[in-house]
Image 1 (cartoon, rainbow, N blue to C red):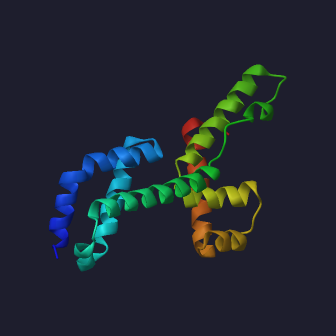
Image 2 (cartoon, rainbow, N blue to C red; image 1 turned 135 degrees about the vertical axis):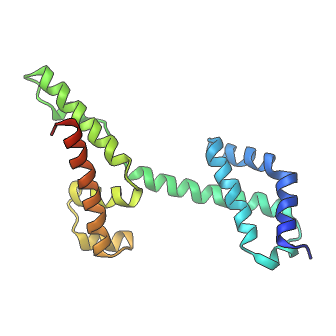
Image 3 (cartoon, helix red, strand yellow; image 1 turned 60 degrees about the horizontal axis):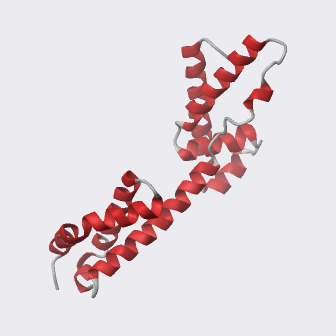
Length: 171
């Protein structure tokens, strides 16, 4: 049985380049591929002393990378499903005054960018509350967090919007 450190060093030396290339093909981005490769190594490291008993380490490593890529893709889809879209903001502005309409669209676009910079859970709580009209209790149940945490997330998003307004002198 090999020590976990030796096993990981050997696997890294022999397979890292191919593993990153494989993971990159799965998710479409080299940086994300690097992250997935790291997750695959961590999967093996998490086995502790049992890692030395892995019969086919390369196959295990690439399977762990495939599983990490699936998890990554699911997380990314969930995160993107809660992003605020810029689409359709043209209809929100006044058509009577083109300059005012332009300024309103710019302000809204900056607000959307600011909200998209928030952590996913914070953004989700804000969207669920302010756009979908859900109560703090509903959001807490849906996200699996406390009502207090929901309130903190919403306050953080509101501060972001307020700070943007103060910086722009707008809204």
